[in-house]
Image 1 (cartoon, rainbow, N blue to C red):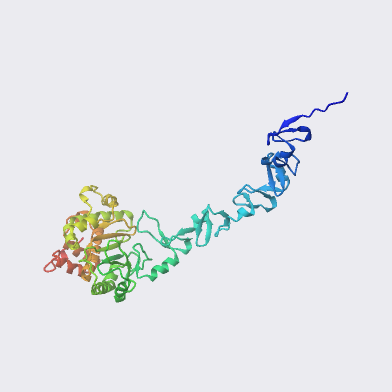
Image 2 (cartoon, rainbow, N blue to C red):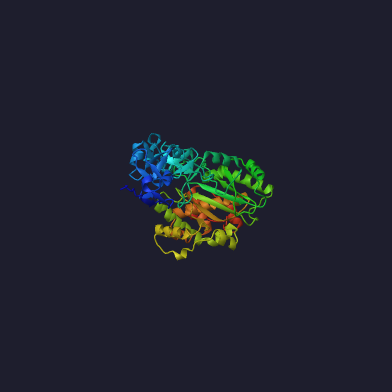
Length: 465
């Protein structure tokens, strides 16, 4: 009897056609392929000979490797995985980044940088751009700062530090490039703060206190040529610098460097006179402009006291003195009521009750923090600012504003709060002159003109602290 061979048929999982299994069948990941489809759908691992679906193998060049057994075949064949792009590359070509503890391929390594400061490899996402190049976050936080003018970051050691006037604000840093640009300007931006030049005249720096003047002029333009004309007229060229001021229509602000009272009286007043005369000669106004003010700063250190408690006590007495003499100060200021309300309002000390001068001063500081637009602005870190004065281009008037500021602070520092609440304007001036050892000639002249002092027949010797 003739023997029969029965053919066994199967359905291909790829083409879904029937095929004779004896003609060849390939099984991979549970799929059965006919010989024709197997050429496209199944591959053989060149390392171990296992057959896999093409999608379950890793191709490198013309070869396929298992990738379902912990990558053993790929690793045995000398490959490893780039931890950035997840591509298998020859293990010897991987670059190990020690500080980041990762291995990457040559292509991915091109997207890394080296910290320009410490040399560690860094990612661009976790680094900062600086004038030196990109640096790591650690170096940036410890060694770099941003120029407050141009926004570029530099090594702190290459920047000029400018201490903020406000306790709530951080110090500013200025790069050398911006410093050179600023120094080349005649009119600076409103936030320009150069390194102060302390002006003394036969004074000892130890124990000295300083007064600074801000004088606004308006009406003839924010013009560099005109600013230079005024600057050229000054005998002391470096006493004032010039800034823009947003409160002015078409003018500018002259800001002095800090000076002792002796310096103002002996040297500074000459420069104020030249400034005022020159500004008037080319069309500027100050009092009549209606937009201008005179602000006088006086240093907290030494002027108010040596300790924080002494400074607080002086501030409390100064506020009491200002409140007590407010009618005379309003007359002295030449301000209108609306200008006072807008730019230099007084603090109502009747709302404050501490009997102790130190605690009284602390409450004054607390009340004044809502705004800098008080008669005395306490918002600056190193100075207090007397803001009540209307602008003027009469040099005697400007000088008198400086002298009054000095007199009031000296009186408040060396008297009691009771004295501050009962003294007259005239007594306050005479007592301060006696203590300071000099006369306020401009203050006397201006106050007499405003009928605040009687210089004829007054008994100057009877007044004392």
